[in-house]
Image 1 (spheres, rainbow, N blue to C red):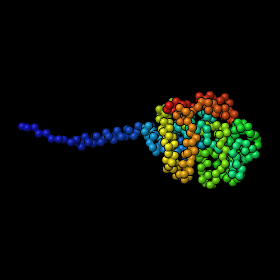
Image 2: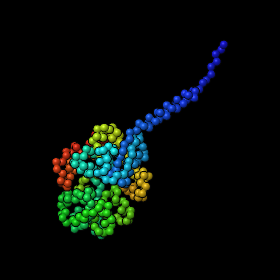
Image 3: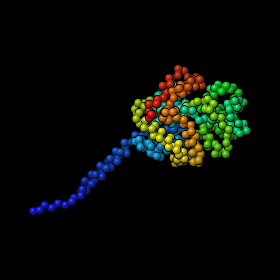
Image 4: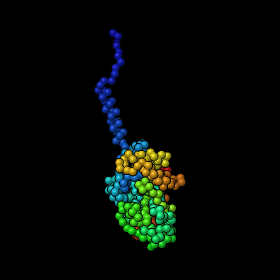
Length: 333
């Protein structure tokens, strides 16, 4: 008797098993991404464009990261959330982090994109303030904790001008610009990376500018900050995040409009995309990398200068050493 053979196909049970295994594989792959909670110290602005472009172009996902970003309501609240483990990273002005560390908060700066905060003093065209000496005899709006005027004593000393001849009017941070636009003060300090493009678009005025950093006010700006505990617990995750951010910065340099569009997608009540793009461009222009170092690299000498600034302006007793404020270990060389 001749044996008969026939071509067989997998049974329905086997097919179901293969489908289940494939589904489990996909599920495992999806769950493999490490979650990272990133909080801004303030509201949305074009300053965060490179972070959203990195998300749009899947630079985080390519490094097995699931990054959630959210607005904040001040540096202090964001830092407390990081220390308590509710957030993983805060994007904030480095000077505020340095001040918190001097007060013994267990955090570190892990990347500093703006070694010099792009803060400027704007004035009215008919009372233009273009150099430090022009501040003498003027009325300047001031708010507690505001970068541009909180360190004015140091600025005056560096530029050899008489600070007693500058009238500082203290007011709520949110009302400073309104008082300026109503001509109640002669000058107000703002960020190139956020306020300036919005004001120029809203008023149609090109305001005279005094660039504080250009005249010696070196204050650490845009930085990534995390807790000492997070660094000890998840150094690899933080390294991958900073590498993806670096890629986002490079992509933003090539295409600022794309970064502006990435922010505009999530900024429901934001300004026109042209204004966001101006914020993005100002942000990228202020990112001046140290030769041979990755973007975000922190210069120890700059941190030492920051400690001296804080000791002078905030009367810090027993300042902590520079090495306790930052680490470059998480940045790719």
